[in-house]
Image (tube, rainbow, N blue to C red):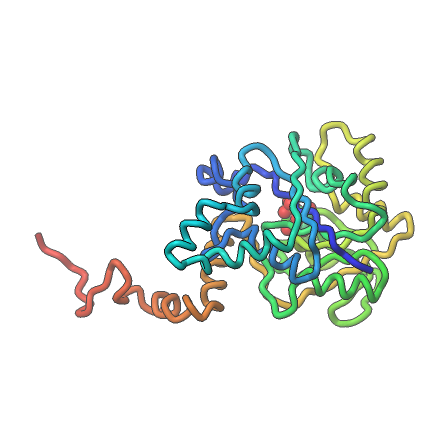
Length: 306
Ligand code: G1P
């Protein structure tokens, strides 16, 4: 089983980050020196995917521009011998292909994925939600692809979440536990209340799906009138039609950058894992009174008199 195509829903208006997202897509929020979307594409490519179908909307041009060449900047950087600054992004541009599909109405995650139906043949494909950044030795998506190959079915990434977070996620009902990290799924309850939740295993933003998801979504598109189309409902419909779906607890750290607090935590967490930034951030967090901080004061006297 080869998984070379990835659908990335990135059309949301990012209301939690307004007014920032008035002009800049939330997928372009910086995490250290790269935008979030850069990490998503890197994870996809490190998992051997090559074709990225990004579902966008109005005012998302900066995503397209980012994954395209910038000849003037490249020439300028060459003149000053700093071309290495673009090497990471140029590697992506050389080795991956991008296509953009507009979602003009916000009709939910299922609808966003459905818009890519003409790009996918009778094959398994990936879905990556850019709100979830996975930092791990083996790329998060590659872990799912390995399981999909082994089990010959669709696979969803899951993570155990505390009770107070349950109602923010799709929660899986386990049909069978195969290993400590691998489950066969009976059903996904989309954002249940904690007392109705079938488990504490929450769906996080990585999926390997059978193309059969599109038949399920087609039916839902016909019957739903202006309601949000949930990807979880389409997965449930595939399950009812006999498709096997598995859930895998991916190994690594997952950051939810869908909220400002989550994004700040991701920056801190990721910079602490980066040898370039870690010593500075550690020092800063252990004592704000450092030489690179605005409140630096060697004698710890922060009172002033005019
Ligand atoms: C979507 C899915 C949900 C999943 C979540 C992961 O919800 O519908 O099942 O748990 O992504 O982030 P959203 O966060 O888009 O509301």
